[in-house]
Length: 181
Ligand SMILES: Nc1ncnc2c1ncn2[C@@H]1O[C@H](COP(=O)(O)OP(=O)(O)O)[C@@H](O)[C@H]1O
Ligand SMILES: [Mg+2]
Image (cartoon, rainbow, N blue to C red):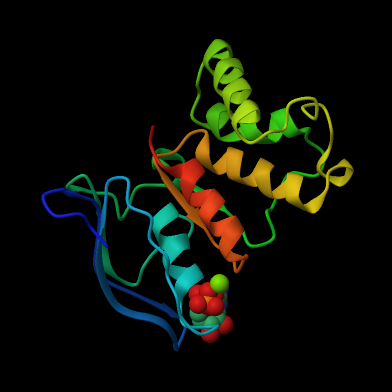
């Protein structure tokens, strides 16, 4: 729930999505406040992931507008949004090491080598993957892979979308880590 007196950082206004003739999402309107942790609950196939994909910029809505701090970002490409996504299957790059995976969104956003090194170091520390930096995803446990996905989503973003049906414990841990400090 949004805290009283705090401006909505993200506003979704009448968002809808059709895939051909199939209606996946209909007239979704909501506000997400700064620092707020929001869970979308709904039956399988109700459009949760579709909305997160729209929020992150990977799917274009059929109707409605999306605002970030009052700016219309509906047509802004994913790499120009401050949103990171932890995909249901993590979607780590299999040929990249832990640190290369985490650095990827920063490279796309053309951060300097110094900034990338510092930010990746911070993220690795925060998600408890020190000593695993050079490993490939296949050399990690499932939990470690989750943490790489979280660090990658989080390192360049203000909005962290987790498209996942994980345990309550994982969701809480994700929320705590995503909260601005
Ligand atoms: N690219 C797509 N093409 C066609 N149908 C899709 C596509 N993506 C999702 N859908 C359909 O839209 C509905 C919502 O999917 P989704 O947002 O993934 O649901 P969930 O709430 O389980 O995350 C589902 O019926 C799904 O089959
Ligand atoms: Mg889903």
